[in-house]
Image 1 (spheres, rainbow, N blue to C red):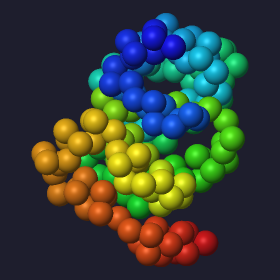
Image 2: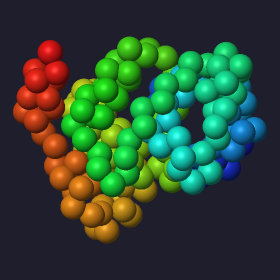
Image 3: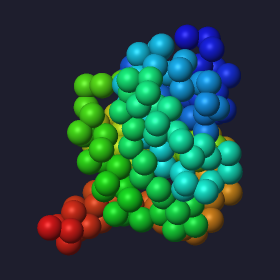
Image 4: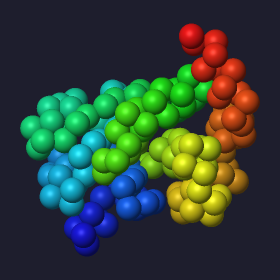
Length: 159
């Protein structure tokens, strides 16, 4: 759907997963019309351009809404593990994941698509991640370097 291209940093990654920066209020309707069933927001509630009633807007359009607030200055393995759980819970549905500019989402989806779905690295990367990676701070470099063992340790520690 061409109208989706107007959403900030829109990237369709797979047939069932798309990502973007913060959509405008009216753009959630475009997502619903395009068949997306779930919207996951990784931005903080007070992030730039945040929409306080986003959950109500999304659910009012018949989609599910999940908010996993990830501190941009300090993403964690725990955040990633929670994200994996939500993505797995909605497996088989069309999912839209967003944050402010699609940076943190690109990193999270990179891990999900490569570690959970086992896709080739090139299919897991967004153009946003490719542009951002050379400029990432240490927190995001460390986050991007998280391996399966660290995720498994975090999962075991949570039990």
